[in-house]
Length: 427
Image (cartoon, rainbow, N blue to C red):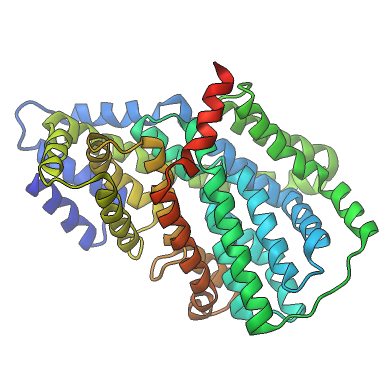
């Protein structure tokens, strides 16, 4: 195993992309194995990416891009602003609420951060918010999309580990809402004690009008989550329903403007899907080789001999994932580490659904940890604000999110209660 790890890290150190590094290091080992051939690697790649559940990923990506193009995201944001934007710091709360609602559809943290940078950032500056605070709220709010279903991160975890994606989706609801509440507490503290923002006035008529305008967007989470919870949709079918809904809305209400930009949206979806699927295929190759060598079982046995308790292992794992998030993207962390630590966690009695939520929480926090945090650069790139200012604004949220991670780690039922209710309601 030391030779595989050496080859992998050597390729990563010289700048080879993560997917090629995984497949390349495995190919090097196959060259010295008398029982494996390169054709088996191609078969492993194809078998992994041909899983039916993976079709949900391009559907949800497409739905998110279509929502941005058709203005559905702006409708959500305007409604949240009318509902709560009048209280001190309310516009930041509105951004947070819109992030939660959009996250319940697109599942993409970086897409959320980029979209809200265009919509919310200029308006926050007009209303007297410091640039660092506005950028920090947007960067941190984007991470909630990694927990609120349908999360692409949870889909990837479910595919890699063969854990129920529906259970993972519903396990992410309570921790995702905890993230939103913890971020809201930070906004209250900063708004009242640091920035001292003034209050506005509530306008019921404006709120009702904003609600009617946002109604088509609000119905999409009802369609997706209601279909999943009611057993009407599989995750893949839910993704298809979300994309179809956004397509129908654009075709009926936006028409010429919508069709003019449809090819660009489709191209962006195809590009991102190709990247994700290539990465997953390379994970399939890596996993196949590990399983063929029996190394996961050996690592699990070695970890068991150390005598670590379940919680000691989880604390060590979460710390490791947070450190890795300083240098790797969330997808890279998933594909590199999950095949290795998952069998170890199972051998120690860790619930696989709980483990998936903890992993997603670490990746959520990693999205705002420098130097690689994608949300930091998404917000900086769209707003033109230096990354250092985005980091300054997101730091308090990073601390509160870490507290949520520790609470969910210590109290697994926060993640497991809702999936348990789902199972009970079906039997």
